Image (tube, rainbow, N blue to C red; front, side, top):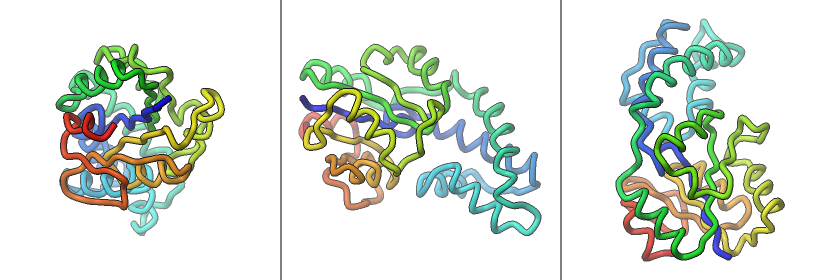
Length: 207
């Protein structure tokens, strides 16, 4: 059976505005580090918030990676304020419906904390997924294959039948870590993905 492993932020949902704003506020409030929203957006798209901020704190002479915990406490408070503004990406619901009609198993795998469950319910997409897996459940972050291996073992998935869909390099590396097929949702960059789409409406021509 074909299995679809969805990333959430930037793939199924447009949550970057809140993530960027919260990162900007947390950096300035905690460490007096001022960055433009464009700089932050570019940085977290290339890696992840955690890696982007960790590298920033290491480079700054007045901070270190040990300050990451302080950042996240403030970041989480601010980011929670934007949850009501999160919207599905264009054609996300159509794509989820298409995969359901085809009989595909669908999962979300995300770095987001347990708030993902409430957000998915508010967006009315929870019922599409067999399971939503978060690093908050004790899993290792992407691109480590831990969360994929968990799903493979629990649901007896075959890697040849898995498609991993995401918008960043870590999502592609994540899929390739178990030799799954990868689909990149990105109209600007490429990361040696198997397939690339500019819009989720193009998904049906691949799977």
